[in-house]
Image 1: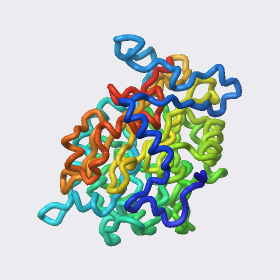
Image 2 (image 1 turned 90 degrees about the vertical axis):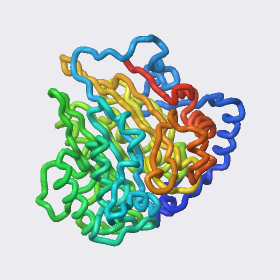
Image 3 (image 1 turned 180 degrees about the vertical axis):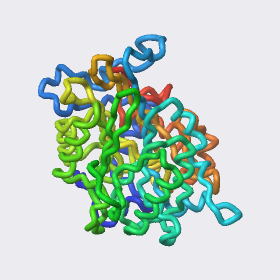
Length: 421
């Protein structure tokens, strides 16, 4: 299989295809052996002395070393949660249609919003435009959706929305202006990252950078995309994964924040393993000061790996958290991830990642308000039997996730988790 970035029309956002026959075969083997977990070597990015940084598989899983829950240390914690791509396929936006001609998408988040409770940064990748009435609603290949999806996202608790994606220019500048106006007007407490109104006055903050502050602890969230599917953006509305821009944005973030969380839109669609290009970018991000990297775009989950940060600690890279909701066809695109990370700032100013986790979610392709997403641990065979993807059973999904994530994943708790100290 060639390791290439997806380009052109973004065909993978259509019905879906999953070319990795070898991976599917490997996952089938995992399922046959009763969810036995395949051993997967995790690499360390940016760490010349690899012995000094443990892989995720070697780190202590949460809840197994001690029966005690995590105990906050002196200083300040910032807890973040991130889910993957919200793709406004026709079946998704039609699921919210109401009898009065309006839209309501609360059902999409009804079964996962409780898992956001307590997090400070609740991040979602709204991959496709919510331009509203400035353009006809459309799904693949060039999207535009109702802004009521944004209302539901904010109501569920998400307070950071990522907008740098290969579909950002699908409905042009009118949709960008309309969506940004919607967020600022209706949900001013939600930070929109990765896209800006090109006609608004310039600011000192680089496109794609947001600084969150809690009790003097400043965390930067950065968002970049590798592609616009061949569409032009002469006004620079979208934050691009271009080396000069990335370096400038990260330099600003290092100056104005204590820790950096970078959310790149990258990789090859339907490929779980990171490409050579992703690894090169991850090295640049690690060298630029990233503490956490959470990727999107492949529409399938990827491995989780640790790396040495420039501050000498251990960072974590979620190569892809996959889809959150879509109507893509293949079973792997129905399985996404909820990344969870705790960042800590000591009283003396030292900062580090203290724990992380990935918890899988499943899109349930039902009709109307039955179009929704569940935590995999809550998904049942009875639900799967009523889905438009009946092959995505809980047993199959557990085996698939175990195959991708490796021996650090526990199918009994539906969780990959580790403490970093």
